[in-house]
Image (cartoon, rainbow, N blue to C red; front, side, top):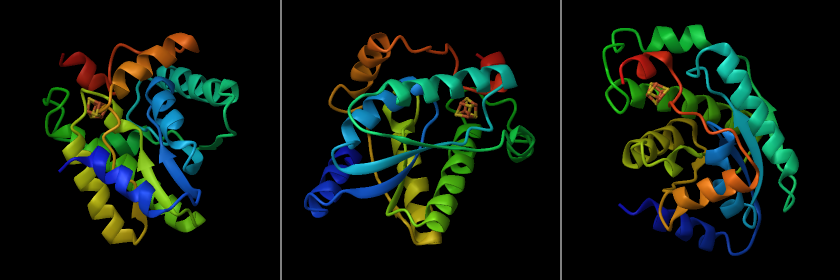
Length: 198
Ligand code: SF4
C-alpha cells in the first residue's frame, strides 16, 4: 500500500474544500514539513499528546519548541491543543516490553496510545479528520502507523488521514525547515527505555 498516494487521493476527493484536522505531533521538526504539506487543504490543530517523552524536562522542551514553531510559521494560522503529561499511563501500558529496542514490540503500543487519544478527541470535538506527523520519520514504521489509524477510524467512526510523509523527500524537507527555523532536534525518539536500550 502506498500511503502517500492514498493521502493524495483523499485530498483530491475533497475537491478543494478545506477540511479540519486534529493532527497529533511528536515534535516541531517532524511537524514542520507535515504542516507545510497540509496547510493548503486543511485547517490544522496540533494535538500535543506525547506521554512517552521522558524525562519531563525533555517533554517540556519539545512542547515549547512545537509552540514556538507554529507561532513563527507565517503561511497560515495553526491552532494548538495541549494535553496533560500522562507518563504513568504510558509506562503502565508498555509494562513487560521494557527489554525491546526502538522499533520493536513496544513502539506499536506507543503509536496506538497517541493515535487513539487523537481519534477520541477529534471525534468529540467534531473534526473532519485525525492524523499524525509520525510517518515523516524514517525510524517509524509507516505501515504499522497507518494500520493502527485504520483500526481507530473504524472504532471511533472518524476519518483518518493516511500518510507517508517521508516520501517525496519529506524527511529531507523537515530537516531543511528545522534549519530554517533553528528548531531543536532531539537525538533520541522519546522514552528513556528506548534511549537506554540503544
Ligand atoms: S522508542 Fe519511541 S516509539 Fe518506541 S516506545 Fe519509545 S518513544 Fe515510543
